[in-house]
Amino acid sequence: MRLLWMLLPLMLSGQEDFISHYEYGEMLYANPRGVSCAQCHGESGEGQTIVEFRDIHGKQALKGSDIRRDTIDDMIKALNTYHKIMPRYYLTDEEVKAIYDYLQKKNEAYLSTFKETNTTQ
Ligand code: HEC
Image 1: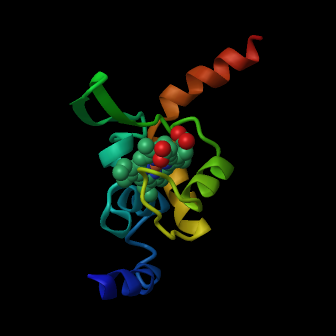
Image 2 (image 1 turned 180 degrees about the vertical axis):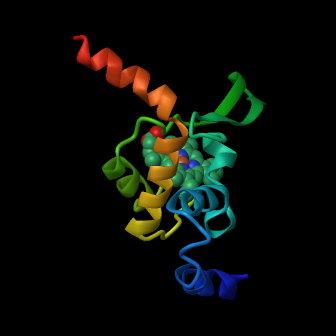
């Protein structure tokens, strides 16, 4: 499995015509280093509940945040630091950019509602 990931950039560079930047980002978001971003941040980065449990304070929920409006800088920073819940991935800036571009494209309609709001202010 590890070997496959090491060979992947070679396989991809040899097949540039067959996989688009969008598909590359989609693939990375779905399965970066074996733990999917979607598991915690939802299918499109909208965020979701990871797990619900009960403790002495009652019902608790652990949530993955909405990352759709994060900038590329936010994303690179978040992926290069250690978190309590989120794993450390060691993705290259190029890989993070592919994920970022994928989410931007996938959420184009949602994100454009904010851009329109801004221009009317
Ligand atoms: C195990 C669950 C989990 C996975 C998997 C995960 N994240 Fe996160 N992520 C979180 C949580 C929870 C936070 C909020 C900070 C914290 O407490 O870790 C976070 C924070 C972030 C942030 C910073 C924005 C914020 O809310 O602070 C970004 C950007 C982000 N994640 C992107 C990603 C990407 C891209 C992937 C896949 C490469 C990923 N995450 C995988 C749980 C996860």
